[in-house]
Length: 258
Image 1 (cartoon, rainbow, N blue to C red):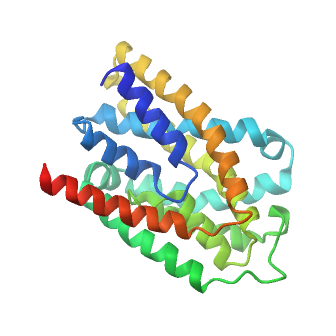
Image 2: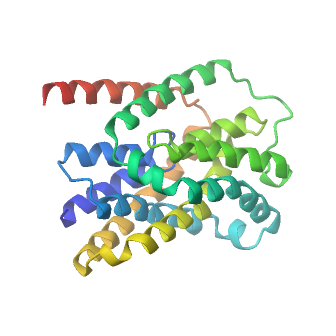
Image 3: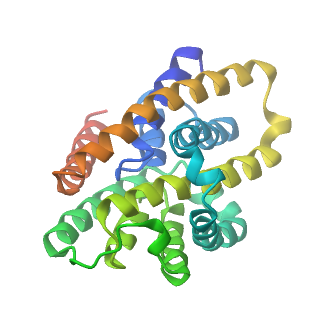
């Protein structure tokens, strides 16, 4: 890896972290296309720069995360399933799923089909909850279970939590913002745990790459969040589902021709 590669991956992370298209899946595929070896450092890098993206959430929503205790409690409850399952399945996910192009392609494709089908089926009810504070703890916990599905690369953490929230009767803007907030403890925990395991293998030169990816992801994610909040005011997630399917088809053609 070099500095330019770190910045490119940071841009990909910043754009994709909060869109329902899977940031991890995109980084794995980008690494394949750039010919990067799936080393332990690259796997840790792909996890760690997500902190840059979620730092943009802290920057934009710090009042809710630090002051609004009702919101904080619901974020904590929603984090519990992913925290427990993440610790339990960490070795399996990192050893067998992260870095698997086949898993990413299948997840992107099936997830795209599901997004399209769901949007045609889903109708928002008039009494849908429009405040995070109105969400029950049971709803928060179930959303956390939906989020845990995204431990499979290519599924998309934002897609799974947003769809879960819509199924459970939340307004689109409400669950999108809750998905932003839930990313903070989820990705912080994943990054800290992973770096504790792999820190001894990271050299001082590689720290520069982490910093470059972090800063780039932070700046780009700020723009991505603002884009998504505007987008959902007048659009469904069908375009993202179509994008996922087209991406898989293009990549399969590329891999066949390579």
